[in-house]
Image (cartoon, rainbow, N blue to C red; front, side, top):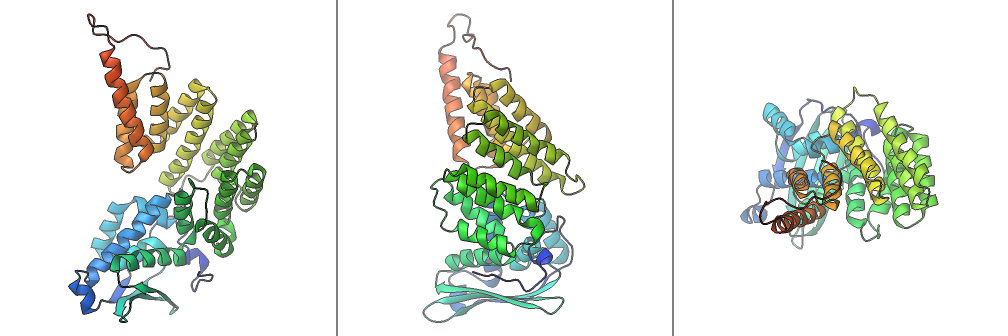
Length: 379
C-alpha cells in the first residue's frame, strides 16, 4: 500500500476541475519480444492500460466535482481531442487525464524475468521529482495491465479505487478491499477532501446496520466539508432506517438546498450528478413509504436538471410500473440503458415492463381494443 506522495497533494490527487493542456512526453515504451509475439506491442499495452483506468473510474462513478478521474471516466470525446492535439497516446494520455499533474516525462516498460513479467512505469515531473510504480508476479499481460491500472489509481487518487471496490463489495457487506483503501485515502487526502472517505466509511457502517455509527461519520465528514451534500442525504437515509421518516426526509432535502447554494462556476455537470443522486434517494424513500405523488415530483424535479440520468429514469419507471403505466416506463428504461448499458436492475425492469405491456394488450376489450382503465399517477 502506498502511503506517501512525491508531488504536492493538490496536484497528485488530481483535484482540479478542469483539465490542463500541458502535454506529457512519452520518451520510451518498450516490451520484450516474447510479449510482442503474443500480440501486445508497446502501443497496445498502453491503450489497454488507459482503457482499464477509464473502466475503473467509470464504475467508481464518484460524483465529485474536484475529481479529474471522474471527468476522465465521463468525457471520452474530450480525451480524444486532447490526444490528437498533442500527438499523445496510451499511458501518456491516460495519466495526463487521470492525474492532471504538471508535465511528465514517462517511461513505460515490461521486462521478462523468466518466471514472470515486471510491468513498470517511471515518471518525472517538471520539478525533477521522480516516482516509480511496478507490478509483477504473472506472465499474463492482461493481468499485469489490470494490476498496473489499480496501482496507478491508488498512487494518484486512491479514493477512486476505494469507491470502485466499495461498489463491488456493497451487496455482500464484506468490505475487505474498500475499507483499508478508504482509511488510506483519509490519511493521505488534504483536509478539504477528507469528507469523501468519511462519507463512504459511514456507508459501510450503515450497510452493517450501525446507523448511529454511520451518522457519526457523516457528522465528521461535514466538519471537514460543510458543503458536501451526500453527507446530509446519507445522514437522512440513516435517520429513516432508525424510524425517523420526517427527520430523514428533512436531511435529504437539506442536501438539495446545500447543492443549490454550491458554487456553480465549478463543473456544472458534476454538480448535476450530485443533485440527481440526492433527488433519486429522496424519491426512493418517499416511494418506499407509499408517498408516490411526492416521489414522482422528486424524480421529475431531478430530471429537469439531468434529463438523461439513468438512476432517476429507472426509479421513475419503477413507479410508473406500479400503476400499470408500462409505455412511459419502457421509454424511460430504454433511455436509461443507453446511458448505462450494463445495469441489471434496469434490464430486469425493462423486461417486466415489456411483459406488462403485452399482458395489458391481451386483456384489452376485444371489441373496442381499449384497455381497462387503471388508476394511478399521470406520467
